[in-house]
Image (cartoon, protein in one colour):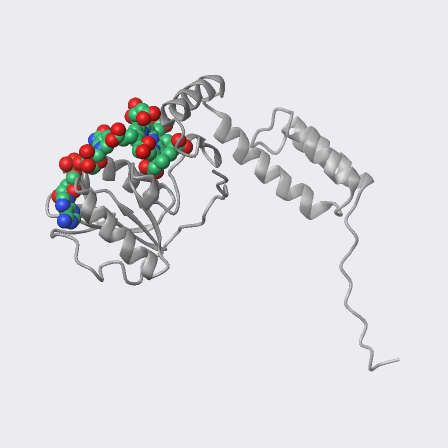
Length: 220
Ligand SMILES: C[C@@]1(CC(=O)O)C2=NC(=C\c3[nH]c(c(CCC(=O)O)c3CC(=O)O)Cc3[nH]c(c(CC(=O)O)c3CCC(=O)O)/C=C3\N/C(=C\2)[C@@H](CCC(=O)O)[C@]3(C)CC(=O)O)/[C@H]1CCC(=O)O
Ligand SMILES: NC(=O)c1ccc[n+]([C@@H]2O[C@H](COP(=O)([O-])OP(=O)(O)OC[C@H]3O[C@@H](n4cnc5c(N)ncnc54)[C@H](O)[C@@H]3O)[C@@H](O)[C@H]2O)c1
């Protein structure tokens, strides 16, 4: 199956989860990690989900799903223990052009959840297109064991330094080469960081052109 891999910006987008059990919990957590605005509908909820509601982190509506509940949402996860309900949710989502994942029910999914290794802004998402979730999990564990725990902090510093370089140098081959070099070096947040010093020296040899006003064509 040829799936299209993308990383969605969900911040502040309304997303809805139907069901509030074991499977719903991990989906709610991953939606919240992307700062989605999450509503949960279920007659009963796990304690952790009740706590998120009490803390104002999500909105839990304590009742069964009703047709029409998906209106206004960007994405829905159907995670009840009743396949007929999950499929009714999928049917409403299809009719309303809302992206739907019916957990563990591939024909009723527009998208699948990947297995994810995360270090700050770095995310490695693994998909087997449903062929073997167990393999996706195994690969996650293997990759996770290989990646340093502080990779996310390093990436934050590298990203800050990259923004400095992009502001200081023009878009050309020299700048690209420098950015590849920096991605292989130690980078830290200190101003005296050797990689930052190197980048600043480089900017002197490859300076961005000064932005000048566009001449007014009517004045000659
Ligand atoms: C990646 C992960 C993300 C997540 O769930 O958030 C995920 N499943 C995970 C684990 C896992 N799921 C299952 C097992 C038991 C071992 C096995 O079956 O292999 C294990 C491992 C375990 O739990 O030990 C059972 C299972 N899963 C699906 C079916 C239905 C079917 O195959 O028809 C059944 C049979 C249900 C039954 O028997 O009733 C279907 C889907 N599961 C997916 C995602 C989507 C495709 C992902 C892909 O392959 O790319 C897809 C298509 C739809 C979806 O749900 O999005 C998460 C790993 C988290 C991690 O990293 O640890
Ligand atoms: N838990 C697992 O590891 C696992 C693995 C594979 C498949 N499954 C299947 O996935 C499904 C969900 O699993 P779970 O462990 O999260 O179940 P669960 O029993 O923990 O939670 C089910 C949730 O669905 C809600 N619900 C039931 N009917 C509803 C309705 N009409 N409207 C809204 N909410 C409703 C319940 O209130 C509850 O919050 C089950 O069918 C299960 O067999 C579970």
